[in-house]
Length: 142
Image (cartoon, rainbow, N blue to C red; front, side):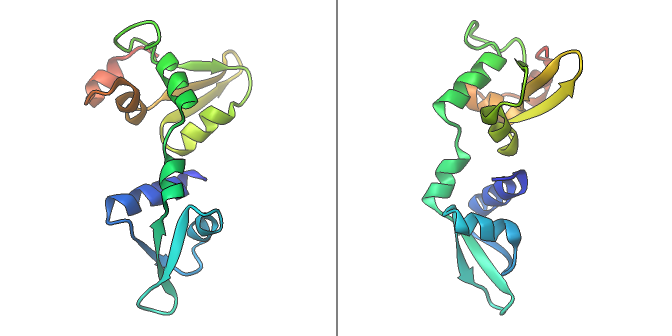
């Protein structure tokens, strides 16, 4: 799934699990082919509404392995409170790339540091299990 597909699926789930679009919407049709969504006729011939399937809902979730990587990035495997926000890799990491697509991480590439992944506010709320404010999140050292 790409970032647009993830955002559209999350939008549908926030709005009664329906997303209205053109029948030829490439992103949604790919989700339908992958079993992550279903397609239903719209009110007009060139429109359709799409619904996220249970398989699609599961695909939006993080795996236990990904949750562990995020906890490590925030330092939560060593501390009860987050004190950092980064994860260093020498090459692209499929788990982190998936989290980037789902909106749980961002990525920065530099010649000096290699590839650095950073958790987002959404991911900190997921692993820390508290209603963290933007101000608190921004105060965490990267």
